[in-house]
Structure formats: structure tokens, C-alpha cells
Image 1: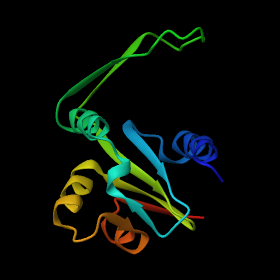
Image 2: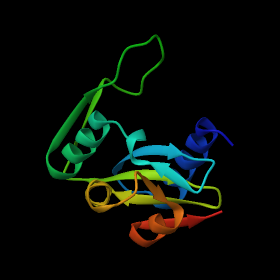
Image 3: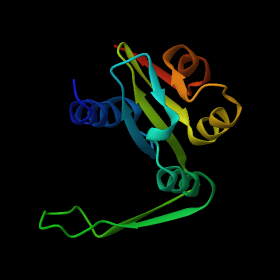
Image 4: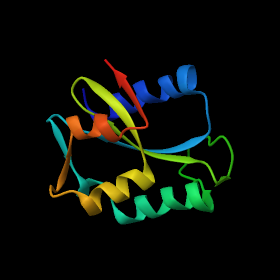
Amino acid sequence: MKEKDFQRTFNHWVKEVYKKTAAFELKYTKTDSLPFSVVAGHQEDALMQVKHGVFVFKIPDMGYQNPYDCFCLSYQKAFIVIKYLSFFCLIDIDVWVEEQKISYRKSLTSKRAREIAYLIVDN
């Protein structure tokens, strides 16, 4: 499985199972850990805006048939979604940021992810 495959699977899961408004940044790993550095600063900032303020985004016109021009998310849930080998999990953006600060590691293990996750979906 590649990240693009997981994106398809995750989109289906959100539509059919989760069914709530939220912002998601998806990450995929083929190992038992994910480096904190794979989430870029601007991605963390945007998720924090969604959760704690107002985030407006203009969908780029790239020649595709877009559903609409822009959207606004305010005071909604925001997650880092990590696909490990045997499960994926949703980690609240505040928890993710705090975990980076307190962790002695430079990565998040699957074991620790299970401990701090908002939601875990086993394969």
C-alpha cells in the first residue's frame, strides 16, 4: 500500500463511518514509527487554525471540475492521521504538538500512538 492508496481508503472510511466535519493530515509509514518531522510547520499551523480559530482555503483552479471555490472551517476537530502497518489512528493536533515537545524520541512509535490516539481503526 502507498499513501495514495491509503488516501482512497481513508476517504471512503470518513464518508461511510466517521461522517463528521474535521480536518485531516494523512501520513503513512511502512515501519513501526513515524518521524515528527514529516508533518510540516504550515500543516500544523493550518490544523491549529481549524481547531482554534477560522481557516479559509481557496481551492486552486487547476483545470479540474472543482466542487466549489473555497471553504471555511472554524472551531472544528483537526487530526494527524497515521497509517501504521496494522492500523490507522487519528491524533488530535494539540496532542500531536504536545507529544513532540515532551517526547525523548524524534518519532512516534505505533505503541505510543495507540496510547495517545483519539481514535484507532485496526485493519
